[in-house]
Image (cartoon, rainbow, N blue to C red):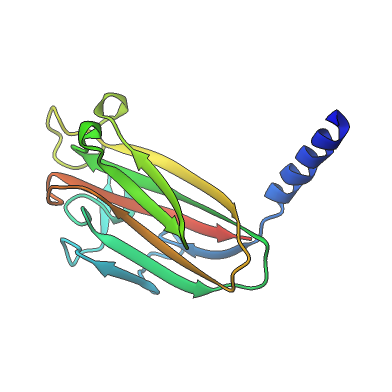
Length: 172
């Protein structure tokens, strides 16, 4: 049994290293919103600086904004997605303020607390902190299409609570 589990782990690790990139967005090579649809954006400026990095959304742009992407995919049996998420300013864990990420009907939810954050961009007040989080999501997936939704349940405007993302990669 141990040998079987060991062999399975080696196969899975090898599969992780053999993912092929099929789509990138919001990176140094591709800073446009082509294919993405937005609802409830707080600004017409969709790419903003946060520290020395450019993000899709960002301070005073995305709050309870909903962004979606829909695309067809080549034949596959699993998918891997990664991106850098920016939580900006006063998200309240007590109020369960979270980012919600859907890949088709699969939900990834992350809530944030102030204690572990630092100031990068935004308002730079004592109560407003920012955080960069790398999301790595791997799942079994064989559908011909993928539908991605990224949103939050923030309850204030983008001048108080906002978010952005960069370096989105889809692999299979």
